[in-house]
Structures are given as structure tokens and as C-alpha cells.
Amino acid sequence: MSGASALGSDAFRVALTFDAEHPDRPSKPGVEGRLLDKLARDGVRATFFIQGRWAEAYPSIARRVADEGHTIGSHSHYHARMNLLSTAGLRSDIAAADEAIRDATGVDPKPWFRCPFGAGSADARVQRAVTDGGYRHVGWDVVGEDWPIERTGADVEAAVVGGCLAHGDRAVVLLHAWPDRTEAALDGIVRRLREAGARFVGLDELPIDEIPTLPLWARSASAVE
Ligand SMILES: [Zn+2]
Image 1 (tube, rainbow, N blue to C red):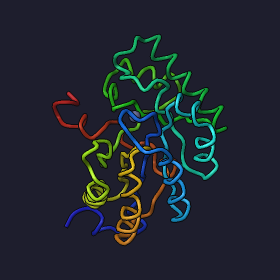
Image 2 (cartoon, protein in one colour):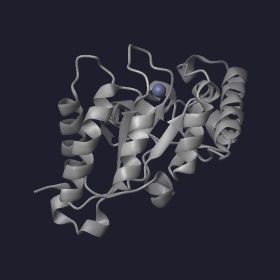
Image 3 (tube, rainbow, N blue to C red):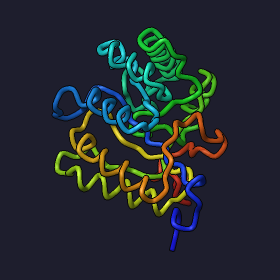
Image 4 (cartoon, rainbow, N blue to C red):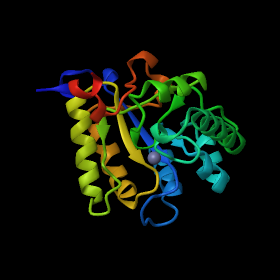
């Protein structure tokens, strides 16, 4: 048996993280608010990586994320692949997101930062700009794969539950705040992981040095070299 089954319930922490951003494919409106409703109802703390321009467009929902006690991070301003930006562009994008997120939420998103698509997460130049901006990059251990339109809520639920049970304590889960399949998956994720002894935490409840800096796909031996 692997992972969580061997651990006491106190030692099975799951950090759900939702990237809140302008969707890059068709989505139903209002998912973010309904996710927040479910998290509040079930007493689940999570982390939201907020895109600066999304916070400018939806300040009231961004504010609600903060007011309901979730950890707030930055997901850049323009949601570009950050390895394609110039060094000056990186710095201005990170600073613009910082200001937009603080204006909307009243919360400083530092030190939590996630590069869009994880692009640049293993790039020294990108990460120097992230670090110089006061941030630490956050990758993930488990992928909900909630963005492809052909995926169902059941698919996402199975990926998250199975991935967290296999990983065990301190599983950082990548989800998004706009897909309706994420909304459909959330109840089952919470119920089944709690039945397995999980406690849902914000990233600020985990030892920072034990939070992955890289996406799962960048952690193979070849990618790290
Ligand atoms: Zn994103």
C-alpha cells in the first residue's frame, strides 16, 4: 500500500490550488463563485493563484477569495509563457500582477507565485525575476487535468483523489477556478479524501521548503538536468 493509507490522518495534508484566470477556452460563467460556496460550506481552505488582469476584471470575486481566508498567490498579470518575456517584461509583469492583486483583494500575494502553464518554472532567468520580485515559485504534485473540454467531472475527481492517495502527505494539487468540470468534481474530491483522512490546508500551512517548486512534468531526471 502506498501513500496516505499508511499515515495517520494528521499527516495527510492536501493543498488544493486553483489558478484563477481568464479562461483560454469556452467556459460557463460563475464557476469561481460556486467553487467558493462549496469550499465555505465544507470548511475547506485552499490556495488561489490569481492572474492580475483577472483580478482587475473581477475585483469582487477576488476580494471574496481573500475574505474567506484562502491563501492568495500570483499567477502573473498577462498569463503569458514567461520564458518568452524579456527580462524587463518579466519584472514589469510580476509587479503589475502584484499591484492588481493587492488592489482587488487587500492581500499581499507574496511569496506565492505560479508561472502560467508552469512555463519558465525551471528557467533560471525567469526564476531570478520571480525571486527578485519577492516570490517563490510553486509547482504541483497532482494534476487534476481539468482544462481539456473532453474531460468530465468524474475524470477530474478520479485524477485528484487517486493522485493524492498515491502521493500521501503534502500533496499540492493543480486545479483551475473556471472549468465547470472542476466545479462538478469538487464535492467528490472533498468527500473521498476526507474519508481517507485528508486535512485540507492552504499553502501557508505547509513548511515552505517542502512545497514543490516545479510542475510534475519538469521533475523527471532529464528535465531537471
Ligand atoms: Zn493559468
